[in-house]
Image 1 (cartoon, rainbow, N blue to C red):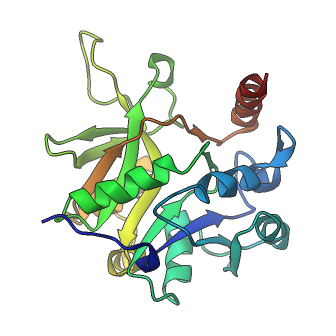
Image 2: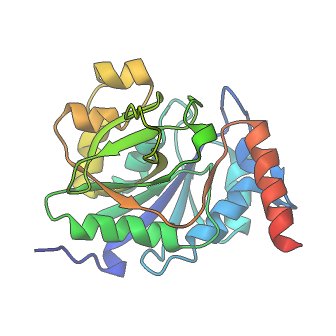
Length: 248
């Protein structure tokens, strides 16, 4: 039986730290006239399923942008390294049973991707975790910053990798790009955060592999809305170009 997640029983957390090896301070980097984080908050707040959003940050400059953009703010330690651990630190003090963890560097134009991830969680009764994927462009397959995922026939994650997966000798089947957003039950998020990093997680530098290495099933919703992951200044320029073209 599918689970039903009520709006008053789920919160959204947007982890947004200042430090980034490839793009320090990217959360407040101006893109088409607005800080990146403001774009993220505006998209998340258009969700029909998640109405409360908390930005989890370690920096006052990010907190100021978050408050001006209409989000709540939770200050967290700068020693926290992963987005999920930062979300767990916030959720531990909340009553909600479910949480959406939307990364602060994943631009979205509206709330549909958030609604898709909640629906994926609801439609897989045996899963306490859900994430998103979409078909990726052929040019992205060899980009190690673009994480790939392969699915079972029931729509659960089999593996995530920075390498092109699966091998497709005919080149005819689209590869799925993993979108770095998750929905968790509160209990699973806290358990996940308590586990130490696992071998494949450390090898691939992908924290979601910690779930698979502990045999936790992960439902995957297919996102039909275009999003942009901002990992580098070049990604930010690409998003600005895209937004400027949309406006023209």
